[in-house]
Structure formats: C-alpha cells, structure tokens
Image 1: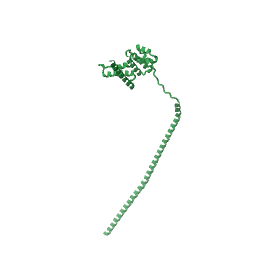
Image 2: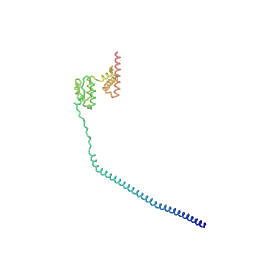
Image 3: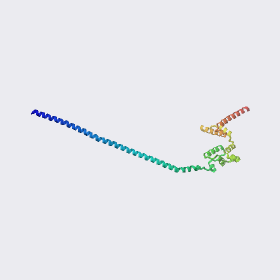
Image 4: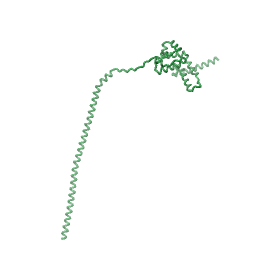
Length: 258
C-alpha cells in the first residue's frame, strides 16, 4: 500500500513537472509572439515616418522653388522698369547735351584809382628809394595792375619828382620801370651809388650783428637789382668780376701816377 502511494506521488510529481515545463514553453512562445507583434507594429511606423519626412522635404523644396521664381520675376520686372525709365530720359539727355553750356562769368572787381591812391603812404622827398619799395609792396599785396602803377604813383609825386614826371614822355610815364629809373636817376640813385653804400656800410656800436647783416642784405639787393643781376647768377658773377676789375684798374692807375 505504501509502495502504491509512493508510485502515485512520483507520477503526480512527474506530471506536475511536465505541466510546469509545458507552461514555461507556452510562456516563452507567448513572449515570442508578443515580440513579433511588436516588431510588426514598429515596422509600419518607421515606414510612415520616412514617408512623412519625404513629404515634408518635397514641400520645402517646392516652397524654395516658388520663392526663387518670385525673386527672378521681381528682378526681371525691375530691369524692365529701369529700361523704360532710361528710354524715357534718353531724349532729354540728348537734348541737354546738344545745348551749348556757358561757363558762369566770374565777377571781376572794378579798379578805382582813387581807392588805390589812398592805400599808398605819403611821399617824403628825402627818401625816394624807401618810398618806391613801399609803393611796390603795397601794390603787389593789393593786386594792382602794373599798367596802373604810373597813374597811382603820380598822385603822390611832388617837387622834384613831379618835375621829372612831367618832363617824361607819356609812354615812359605809363611804363613803371622807365618812370622808376628816371626818378632814381634824378636823385642820383644809380647803381654806383648802391655799390658804394654796400661797400662802405659799417656797423654801429648800437646795432646788433643781426641788424647789421640785415642792412647789408638790403644794400646788396638794391645794388644787384639796379644792375638786373639779383636773380640772374650769370649777371651777378659778371657784376662782381667787373667791380674787382675796376678796383684793380683804379689801384694800377694810382701806382702809375705815383
């Protein structure tokens, strides 16, 4: 009896184990089925996502194409408007170019002798050189025409200078250089006088060296200008050589006489 119960228990135990294994297999089969279903569900979703992305891409490409076409049409319309405007303006430009263009006339200030005379300082009979130098500088600063120098100058001449002016021909009075030379000659202010002043000039004790150099430069300039050699190096060289020649010739004459 005991043995039968043992066998029965063993059979039940074996049956239970088989049931457990079968249930395990069923569970695994069910799990595989679930995984397969899941994969089948995911696959359509991926295809749908790809299809959606492709639709979006095509839509954006279409939008870009439409935008570019609109820009191209706008540029062509702008070019057409510019061509039409140019065709409209071209006849006007041709007409303007055909007309002669006159440059605007610059207003030239009128020259008045009376106003010019007032700008010149009063003439002092004892220093014709300084007066003429001042006159020339003032005339240059005020842009007086040199052709008018004689007319301006005669208003200030008195005494000896006025007599020289009256004795000169009208043509010489209109020529400032000739008028100036005649006035200086009348006062014995000739190149030789300028030369002697330059050579005999000495420094005073009250003078500075700078002042003495300045006086030397003035006398030298007057001497050279009276010989038309101040700005001409060849004439200046000849002037100095002739002075030296005459000086040595004078010393030789003194020696011969002695």
